[in-house]
Length: 286
Image (cartoon, rainbow, N blue to C red; front, top):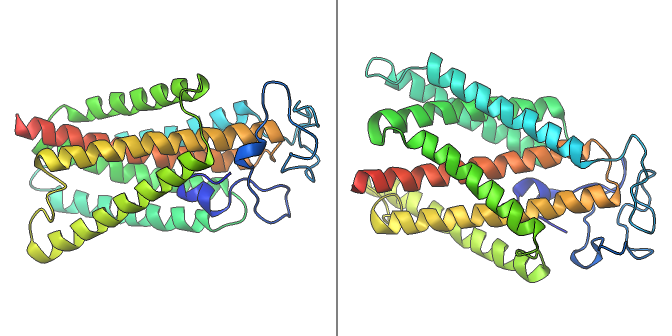
């Protein structure tokens, strides 16, 4: 299965340490009664699940605890560096230019590191944590600017909103209210492509017109566009949950848990930024 997350859509979980990138199929995920013989996409992996869908129990197989711990470490790095940049990079009139410049530079570095990791065959923990650190610097500066000059108090609301979206999507996925199928995947990918195209067009218009572009950053249209972005982020989470579930059930190598952490972190950053934008517009309108 391919996830809409740019990390997972590039390579997914590998079948073994030296194999080509492979993906668990939508129609071959383990069910309550166990997986059928021959459906395991990690059959060549010595840590793969057995034909009955039971974990092999070897130390090299990825577990849910691995995914949780690495995701917590990656997200924790984002949070710590965001808080430090908020405290150490003031955005008052005297320091706004310098701090904002550092934040933009950190965003560009995070983008480059994210792309490098996305095209690597294996996850590199140091690279992933470096990405998280620079992403945190950018988020800290941006959040401080928004809180100081645009909408005070909105950052905490955006953080709580991100947590709520994560928890709600996880519950909906575990209860099977969200079913990740090929049709679901294709719909999300088509919607995401359209969303990104509109963002690019809006950016071009804003550059050449020195204004708000097509109006996607303010007013009712900006709110609607932001809500669509949040919903897409929730769909990304569902696809990522499916990817992780398949990887654990089929016995992906333990190192792949770093890719899961990387992908989930990217999705949560996306959701936070969209919620922050929507709340900022709403507060300004009031």
